[in-house]
Amino acid sequence: MGQGEVKRYFVIGDIHGCLSHLERMMEELRPRLRPEEDALVFIGDYIDRGPDPRGVVERILRIREEFPHVICIMGNHEDMFLTWVTTGRDLDLYLFNGGGVTIRSYQEGGEFRLPPEHLRFISSLPLYYETEDYIFVHAGLRPGVPLEQQDRFDLLWIREDFIHSSYDFGKLVIFGHTPLRRPLVMKNKIGIDTGAVYGGPLTCLELPALEFYSVYGSEAPSFDLV
Image (tube, rainbow, N blue to C red; front, side):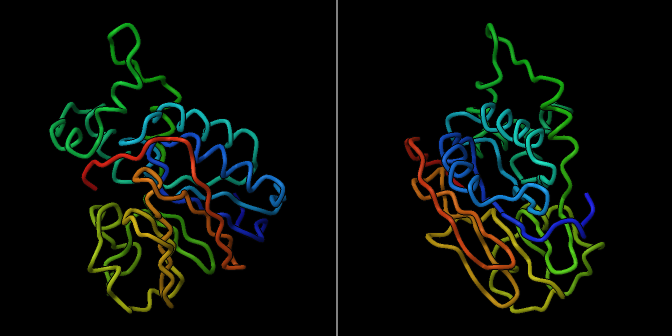
């Protein structure tokens, strides 16, 4: 996708299997979107914890067919899922982090069956996406480390060392991963995970307008550990 073609970015926070949140967000955004010049950015954690992880992945795949500019970032939950699917390792870690509901959502006739297009989608997710003005990443960045030298673990899992830092990353960093009661707006970063799966809203940030949209879904909240 050519960056010069995009004038606005609509960045959507952690969905975690909450399909009704995603559907309502798309209803909220659709009248505002100008497909040829707007980009939808999904910040990761499409699966786990919530009731319909498979449905969320299928919906995002349809969104990618419908809109020309869609950017999907890898979240730590997609990374854990991919590790288990491709190597069989770290199942206990994945289940501890709410992966059981995702495994069940892909069961057919008592067997786990992951559609090839879903595996290709998850396997293809980048760890971050950079534009002239923004860095989109799931968890955050390690202060003082150049973007191209950032550690994979930090990009997917970092919390306090990034959130509490006033370090100038050179561009505004947009991130999810850490659920907050309301979006975190700082000079160097904006956090948009507002805990949809825990009973909060799903939040979208419009850039460069710095306008927020929030919707609630119909799913019962999850009380799993973060």
